[in-house]
Length: 218
Image (cartoon, rainbow, N blue to C red; front, side):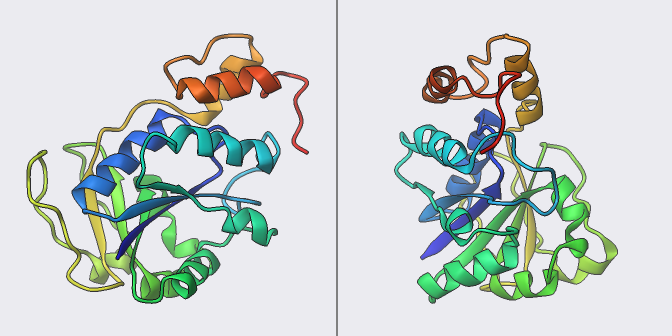
């Protein structure tokens, strides 16, 4: 079994999260992609709305794709959300699975500052999503972990890591210029976010009046 791991605050989830995740799922022939909302992010500020809202929005957004899975383990664990602890937990649940951690170019640039980053590479392979044509950049400390691929177009055979863990590969994906920060700003200004996030998420935000100026995390 090959399991993708996609962590984030998802505050709120949007198409910029969903489309790359689908392309990773298909390009690496994963059995599933697990969306894992963070409880207390350690690399960014406190989420704007309660965890219950963020979890429900993820659930609504991924419902149409059967191989997308909502995973609540960081929310249920509570406290700071360290990816190494999350991967250890997933590995306990799926001891024979190959884990593929999905992250962006900004995240891999800072990866050696993550908590127990060396142990993350003992637990999983990493796929770094990037814009087509962008340079594959790794910090010097990660050069030995590089997985060399030649995958640039739809229709190429599925990619496979050449080890069960400890490799870092780059995958060009459709990167939409959408950010949760911009979505929150639009909502605070009373503007529409339709077509930036799934309609079910738009309806949920409207129903619960999330991200308006008076909204606070609870």
